[in-house]
Image (tube, rainbow, N blue to C red; front, side, top):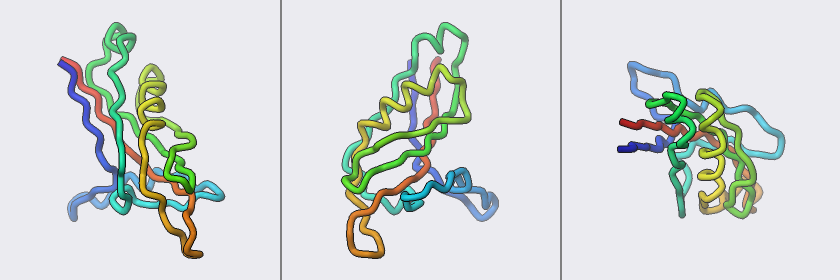
Length: 123
């Protein structure tokens, strides 16, 4: 059985002030946003890589910084916090996401960046 969850990062409780937004790498040309502020039109979950299972991985968590163009389509992503064998699967899934374009301060659609957390579990 494979359990996969996508956590819209940045949630925190009063006891845990840390948020994934602290992991954002400032990138010129992209407005940093919290994923909770986005209207997600389509999302996809990554597959648990068979190679990862063969290597003995059962529980992993990957953090992806997603860069979305002003049209609401992901342009690129970076993955960290998990073995490299998971990176391609996460990046392929992220490319399928679609968000409603974010309107910038100038009233026009703006490119944005945000952080997602993917949790992989395989029994």
